[in-house]
Length: 140
Image (spheres, rainbow, N blue to C red):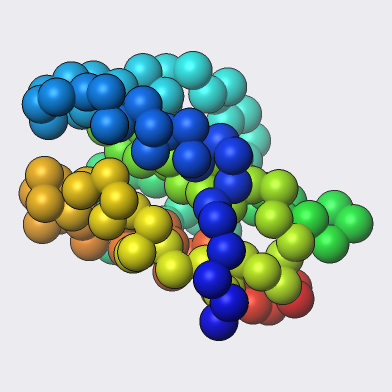
């Protein structure tokens, strides 16, 4: 596994987090990131895209074009929708072969997310990362 900087989009989130003093502001920021995402079309909210292990409803729709990984997602919980947006910043645009090598736990630790999420939300976040890694590994 090679050490490399995260995507510019994720680095921007890290920088923004450094300016936000308390967790409530960071929480609102994550929710705003989710609100800024385009909604996932209902036609893509199917069992094949649903992520198990999340307390809320979560769908991830990965697309791999020309070896580049990206995904869209949706959740019925605002904070989870925001977490999907954070994961999109972390993974979208990477060569599919690089996705599995991303130290998601290490990158997300830079945001102190796990310290401030309920155990159910943390489990859901892990389930989303697991799904992303499985899809990438199957298509690498």
